[in-house]
Each structure stands twice: as C-alpha cells, then as structure tokens.
Image (cartoon, rainbow, N blue to C red):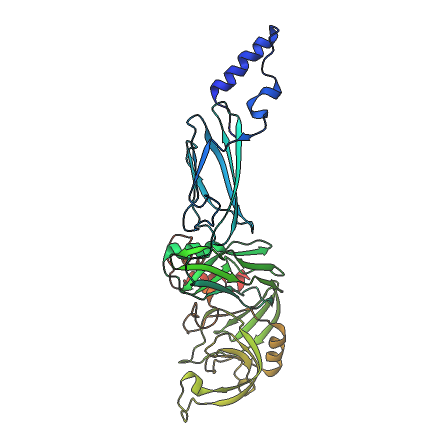
Length: 420
C-alpha cells in the first residue's frame, strides 16, 4: 500500500527544483526517494512469534512485526502459506506494529513480506520464510460435505458434518470462516449451525437454475482450540437443473407444478385429513422410490385400528424422513381435487404420480399451503431450511449477529405461488 511522503520531504524537493533554475544540480527523478529500489529493511524491523532460528515454529503463537527504527514505520505486511491462504492481520495507526488476527496453520510453510518507509519516505522491504510444526495434539476435526456430487434441484442445501462437536462461538467462527461455498452465478448465502456437529448452507433465495456450486474447506492444520485442530475435507461440486417448484394448495386440493417460473401441470390431489393434516411449508425432495410398502404402524397407528393400513404404493417421492411422500393413490381418485382423505401424504392418480416422479429430482421444492397442519420442521426431518426467515437463518451463523428463532410465517407467505 502506498503512502504520501511527509511534508518536509515535499518542501525540500520544491526548494531544490528552484535551485536547479540557478544552475545547481539537485534532485532529479532518479534521486527521488519514491523512485529508488526498496532497501533491505532487516535492521528496521523485528519479528516476534513463530519466526526464529530456523526451527519449526509454534503455530499457537501469533505472528508479530514491529518497527525497531524510531525514524521509520511499517506500511504493509502480507503473510501467505504454501496453499495460498492469507493470514489476516492488523497494522497500528502509527505503523509501529503489525500482528496476526487469524490463527496460523500447523505443518505449513509461510512467506512474509514486510514493506517499510524511512523518515524521508524511501521504501524498504524484507521477505522472510518460516515453517510451522505439527499440532501438539492428535485430536482432529474433519469435515464431510453433502450431498454427494451431482445435479440437484434449486432447493438443495449444502451440509457440513463435523467429526467433533464445536460449542464455543469463537471456535465456531474459526470453523465457519474456513468453510467456503461459491456459486456461478454468485448468490448471497450463509452457514447455519444446526447443532454442535452439523452446519447447513443455503442462499437467501433458492439457487439459480443451471448453477455450479462448489464447497471446500481451508481448515486443515488450523488451530480451533488448545486440543482441537482442523483436518481434511473432500471438496464438493454440485450443479442445479431447471427451477422446478410444486405447490400444493390443501384447501383447493390442487397441485401446481412450475418449471422456470412457468406452469407446466395442474394436478388434482388429496392431502391429510383432520388429525393427520399435511405439514405446511417448504420441503425438499429427498429421494424417489418406485415402490414402497406403507404400513400405518410406522406413524404410530395401532394395528387393528379403523385407521390402520398396509398398502403397496408406487411412484413415491419422499419429502420427509418420517414418511411423508407425494405418491400414487388409486384408491382415493374419487376424492382427489375434492377432499382431503390421506394420512398426511399427497396422493394423486397413478398416471399423475408417474409424471411427477419422472419430472422432479432430488433437491426440487415441494411446498404445501393452506393446510391445517403444523409448519414443516426446520431440521431433523428432511430439509425445512427454507421455512426460516433469512434474518433468522443468518442468526444461526457464528459470523453474524443475532440468534436463531423459529420458523416465521412471513417466510412461508413469501414463497407462495405468486412469488414463484
């Protein structure tokens, strides 16, 4: 970073230019301090922390650079490891001290470039290298990104599973800062801590159609706490397909399917009857099963009850882990489009279910409105991530202010059909 020479330097050169008019040889362009090659600033600065006698440095210690010469100051410091990761730092206003504000990685090679200027504004430079040692503890936090690489719908969140719990907010910030997600086209997104060992990442809105999304970790070798260091993570690459959103209105018993904001099909359906009301809100397709045997005992209905059932079900598209599907229900065709008679699933004719099964992919959005059911759980039963308002989603980040709150009805309203 450049700095304007001190006032006395500017004045001195002005006087010498005047002297040139009188035939006196004075400061030409080659003699100006700012045009000179940087001098070796080794005697002007001192290093504290990991830079030392050639031994492996302790990554626990911060890196610090100080100006030793009272007539000079530090103008810039950059520290970078062999993988291209920069060390964040802070330079004092008077230029006498720079110190690292982010942790150093263990078992890494660093190059530090220090720029200075003397009392006349002449630039100095010093480049040093050092290596850090291995962590003193064997506890390592590895990260596993999800889902598997492939093509998904625009509602698919990115997940990060940690092998060790992280509870402290400052330590969470270290972890979260190292987990990078990028997309093309670019979108505004954030991580949200689901619990001590799991994070989800989603954009403010759904992903763009036909986007490329990449997740990677820079955590390897980074100190998280005195007993925990960052480990390895395999990068993740996803793509999105068309923007497919299916909206079921439980009160009108109709599903409307949108593709890239255009209606492509309207389907008469039946949803959950009273006592078994289908969950409201946004869900994400978790998978597709061409055949499922559905038993009432799986949702707590006693065998022999008037509500018990044991049915072969075809073209079943799963939207919750607890067993909510969009599927073929030939036994209720007479009620589809007119009444809600299911035990919570969205039923339709076999032909419509086969079409839906073939049209949607994992990660596509399935939304239910105007049901008497509760709102889809945010976590733990699939991906209800989109039911959390953006401000509350960001509140679950260790890098953002605030705290997570429950699902907001304004978020469900925001995603209704007219906004698709």
